[in-house]
Length: 298
Image (cartoon, rainbow, N blue to C red):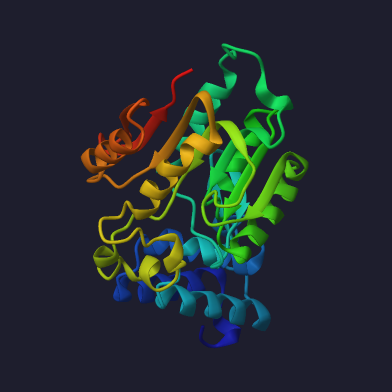
């Protein structure tokens, strides 16, 4: 980052911000501050009072490596190794998709149902029954957030990626809920014994054609298998809808995150595959279709 004798917190930040501006990196000042705080292993607020503190050679090199990765459009969450979701901090790396704020709707819907009283006898004594199943769990963010806010709940979480499940297990242990979440490598719910009152699913829903137009931070760095939802983005949603009768308990609900333009097609798919279920769309804070809800009859 320049002459080591002259590299201070302030000069390092100025140089990085200028490079980020030139490269068109989003939020260049915030990005530079977050990366320098990470390189120094200090809170971001610490930088404000230490403008003139010098960087030693190791700190300078660490910061330069992070800046270079940011200039290559690697997502900030991967650079920092963490991301906040539903008020919790998760370890994040390229083995799993980065959790997004809109996905918190799935947690809210699941918790609302889990907190409602059961209408019939509790089926939890049945083999394979859990309170909730998170399908395509990735980093485990949805399942872990549910477990943290529903302390008595038992969950199952599946993913086709063994690498993503490694991340999820670390996060579950970090948040003290590993003993209440059964993680399983599976293609959706194929060959799994689980049945639940609630199923959540943030499955890949980007169309294959749209992937090529995604920002480089997503297209080049996040796992493609966690993005590609097929020709219309709903291939995996349809497959999981067809599996619901075997895995969703009577009176239960499944919540799917979908793309903003996919609402009508998702509703049609759910109505065709599950004609006796009640289906609806919920909008996000931007007023866009975001969650497909499927409620089975009692």
